[in-house]
Picture 1 (cartoon, rainbow, N blue to C red):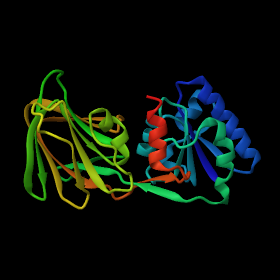
Picture 2 (picture 1 turned 120 degrees about the horizontal axis):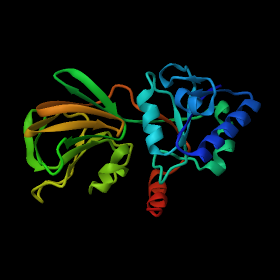
Picture 3 (picture 1 turned 60 degrees about the horizontal axis):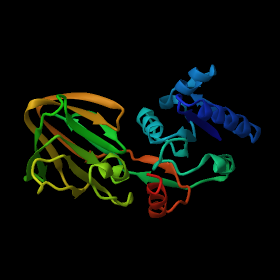
Picture 4 (picture 1 turned 180 degrees about the horizontal axis):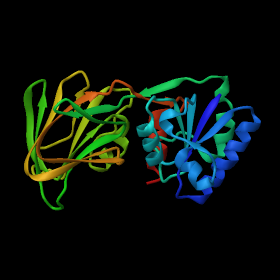
Length: 270
């Protein structure tokens, strides 16, 4: 089995653990390679996430490291996260159990698909998000005006500091902090959460991914689109974004962790 090993590069403990993990897995007969960023810090040979041909990616880090890894993959391969972050909703395995779990992977594993959202403007693809896409003002303390169009009908108009377009997976991330609900990741839908809306009647919406969703930004103030906290795109002042379910979902190794039990456990850390 070919394993891609990715690690957060700002933590010496995580890097030392990744080296130890690589050595142990190679003794078990696995072909283990480092992702290029991780390798550069460790002085090893590395490979781009997009072109490794790996069977599975083992990520040592928090949610940000996992999101970045998924973003960089040209072909989605199953990911298993080892939690070396603050909370780590996307990381199912703790460091103390990582080695024994990863050793079982060559014997076979099941895969859990997580939907991503695809965003485009004027039929030009802007990117895919596993957690969320954030539309936010480029000028602090300025409000934006939005229209939400569902199946060609204007469903809501409001002003706010910004708008989160989240997947169910991302409902436990920024969207939760902004007052959105926790959504079962098996649901296929778009979660819209206004940021600090001017009117209290502007509430979060959960919309089926089977519907046609368009976000219209109608403001004199410029805005940016931030995808999974990784990519920043200038939108300007007036734009219409088409939101769809991405063709290729993210793939995660099923670690047989109950989602609601995991949420309850991790939220007690906050």
